[in-house]
Length: 65
Image (cartoon, rainbow, N blue to C red):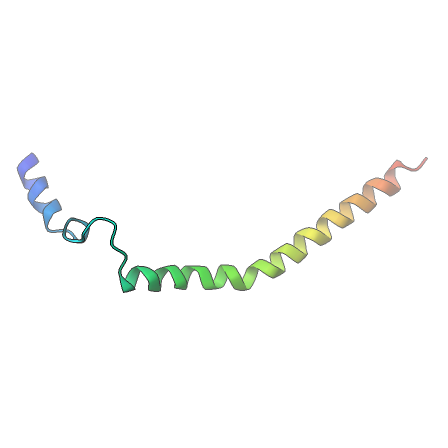
């Protein structure tokens, strides 16, 4: 069983790929996943800043007697 698993693992991409190498496809997938994050980040930041400011004002007005 162990020998069969070892032979199967030797045929996989990771076993054939040199350790620490970064291929064109790795870069492509990184860009593909990072572009949506970079486009959405400014809107998320504005949303959270508005929420924080709203909570601060709500707490200030709730504090007054």
